[in-house]
Length: 361
Image (cartoon, rainbow, N blue to C red; front, side, top):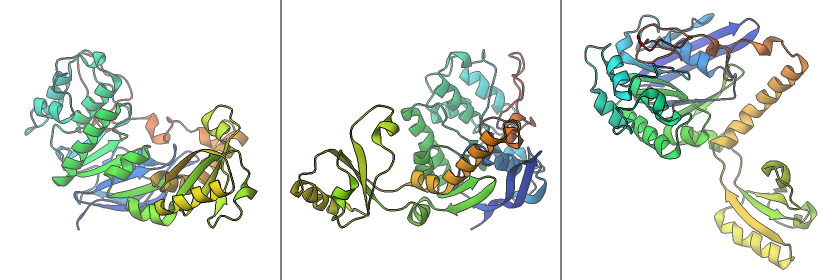
């Protein structure tokens, strides 16, 4: 398969904060590649390096066999985390404006339909809900029918029904040959959409594979959670591994006498055996919940230590290197570049008289 997005040993630092620590990845045409990781992991910096809005300190990036700074911008769509278009233009007017930047743009009405806003086209942007505004932003990246889409947390603030509309749209674009690179904190989104997932932690790509492969390698075993007042010794004769995680009252934020017992490696067929064990020994319980591991377990396994290290460092060195400029994702988010790409992003809110276009990732 043809790699259309490539990063080779990319490094980027902001003062003493390392945002990228030698990241290498290759993304194939038509692939949906999901980037996950803790806040500050380097996801946005990587997207910016791949779209030419941040220059890496070392390493190389290629997009459609060209440098990100020289690629034909008509071939890309970029959705940043922060997008503030003029409030007093309608959704249709906004998409019409961005479509006017291209010689062969899509019909704005068709784009509105794609993002589930066919009936909201005449509504001012400021009067749309937060989720509808985000869908307009997604639509702005599609007016030039790009070959590659970079979407930085595309469904943030969108309600469940709208989120599924965007998911179906992304899947349809991928099926038609569009390559999609998206960042997300929603593990269900990554698990559903991504053909391949990369997990960034402290600027390093610590895992890269299909969701199924990552879960198999790092997700651990299935688990049966038993809500009970019984202590772990009551389960010592059970033929499965047993442990007790954080008490229920701490997990759910309210007091309870019950604390969960977690039984590992239990298949659905084994649940009856566990129930028989409870009844034979008259162990009282109020509920059972069986779950398979997913990407969330992979994330917790691989990223938890990085998050703990970052928290410890921040507590021990207030105002130090971990306080580099930026928002809650990584230092790159403190600035923006505008250069005429399908995506939009600005360091200052644009005037309502003159919409501004550009890209930020």
